[in-house]
Image (cartoon, rainbow, N blue to C red):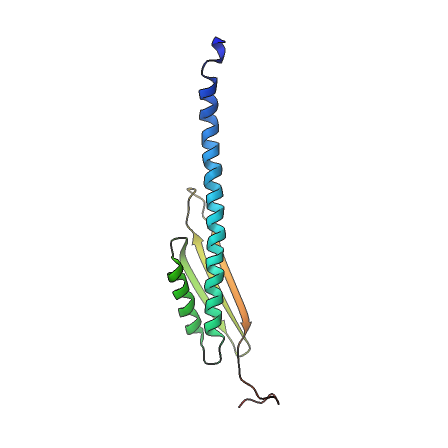
Length: 128
């Protein structure tokens, strides 16, 4: 029995850091999932503003950044917004770095939304 003294303490010392790291990784993955949804939402809001007939790429950029500010920028750090608008198609991309819970682990989240650029046409296909 004397040789077993301290075995429980040794097991606790070995297992506790592994459990803590597992818990932190779970939190980090949840934050990454949440940051991806924030980026997708901001991209969709930017697309809605940029694709309308009288909209512009600047309108989409401003709306996406406003959505990011409203949702809180602590989860998605250093977000960048890129809007591409042509006469036929509009694309909004939002990228950023996820807040780090696990030291040294730098994950990125992004969201993209695309759709047809709106334009008013007559039933014959001509523009008014």
